[in-house]
Image (cartoon, rainbow, N blue to C red; front, side, top):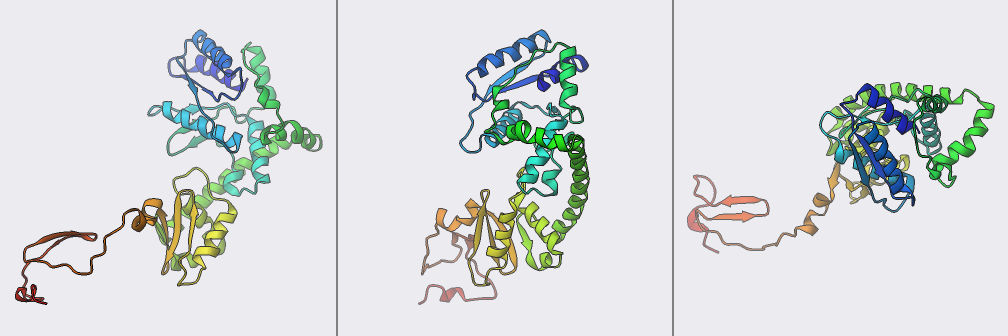
Amino acid sequence: MDSMLLLHLMAQIFPQKIRAIYIDHQLQDQSAEWAEVVATQATILNIPYIIQKVQIANGNLEAQARQARYQAYQQHLQENEILLLAHHQQDQAETVILRLLSGAGVDGLAAMQAIDYRKDMTIWRPFLDLTREQIALWTAQLEVKYIDDPMNYDNHYDRVWCREALWPFLTSRFPKMQQALSRTSYLMQDASEILEEVLKDDWQYSGSADYLDLTKLSELSFARQRQLLSAWMKGQGQYRPAFEMVERLRAEVIESKSDAQAALHWNQFYYVRYQNILYRLSKQIYFAETLNPVDAELEHSFKLEERWQGAAGLFHVECKKIGLSHSLLNKN
């Protein structure tokens, strides 16, 4: 309902500047029929459209479907285009509840932003301050046709359970809960922006994307250390590591014995400490010796002006005024 309303409104406001992208998750038998409905409406509105089928990987269905959906969006977004999504105020409040129950911090409770600038795309959510009731009324007034997905009523999924079971119970006690949770998300966005400014300074002082100086890290407060480690592990990814993973990095690697060869693997990277530096290594670098073994040579004879390519680079044997006499090079 909300997405189809957004499509109709944008067709009126920006008739020559929009395209519709429908993601078919292929989780319902009727998904192909729903794609036809979207195509028909887009044709009536004279809007170009794309029907994109995706395969959902195993694991958490909601998370995997979301990941597949955004990957598909990214394939079709062109430079300077903005992705419009129809999330509304109740969606925002549900996100805050679910992230609170999962133990999220400030960034998680900041939830969704109305204008979300990401590395690979920009997202605009124009309905984020509208209630579901307002959207339903608007949809009815404009006589917008839409599809009601039966998965939206399956309490097996966390968000549906939150909406169908938990939500009525909480709102019966706290009737203004939705507005309050939405306000909390905005306050957390403010807090997140302030923390980001502090974090940027701490990161520049302590290291780079590939390493952290543990001596400089120890000069920060414990809270700032934890925030920096969390953001550093996240890197260019979308999500930060779990609280427990950051604690493992501290306990198993940073605070390990100086002679221990401790390493922590998370999200395709390996975290190791050498002396007082914490490194973030790719698999290729971490296993370089195993993946690209170097032939050990116990003895090698060289001749003057010979060039030799070794593991450490290209070497040139030449005569110099200092060093060993070339007359001695071929003698045992």
